Image 1: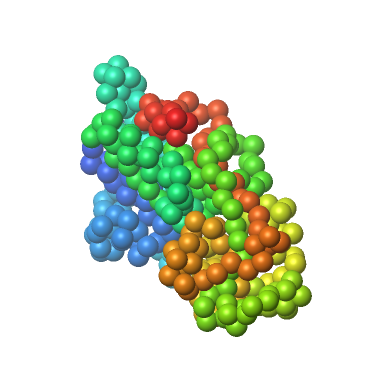
Image 2 (image 1 turned 30 degrees about the vertical axis):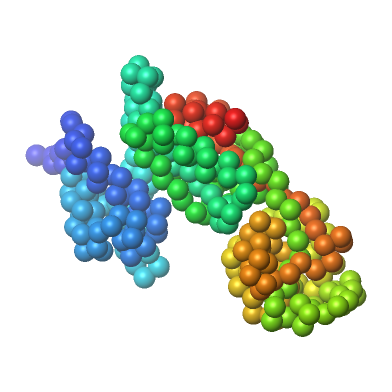
Length: 304
């Protein structure tokens, strides 16, 4: 008698517990390892391992392999992850449809920001989030700090509803809304010889160690840095500030961000009439995606 190929049981019902396990799997993949997912999920690696094993048993398939470098998805794991994205998007759309029927805002807003916007004096994001939360206490606001490239990718993939990034090269997959225009100045710290120097010249600055960020920059910003000797890099403004405060580097910072140290007498701007540029910050949303009600209201508050 010919042996029949063993059929896998089909899932005929998705429970809340299933959705919880699927969300956990998605988070683990996004974090890259059980260790990195601990802080996000608020549970231990052993608990994550147990729940992942439970999910694999419920689906009757191996989703990933663990190794020193993190997790590696199986082909089945890749397929399940894609299905999770569809499932969660459907749940979000259902919640949005119900919200519109009830005219009641409830659900989540996942907003990703680059670092150091909190000191922006206009505070448009802060005020919009306040107004949104005041409108309904059933809105969960999740703020994620990330690099510009991670924010662009996350918005396109649907992990973030909206992001705030420097307005440099624009992606065809995103919509942009101008938000801030940040003036940058060149700073040294009170530990640097130029802090007490009566006359600092462009020739002196050209020979001085300068820190530069690894972010994409506008042509004006690139031009300013080309006038200097860039000998160190930092991933963000905080890293630039760290190196400036050592007293061995100078560097550009947003004026509103540097003011914290300027008012304490720990930094000062150098040759402001020559060394300055503007950097725009834009809100980004996924192009072609229908905004849910919460995101739509947030963008309206931003525009007012």
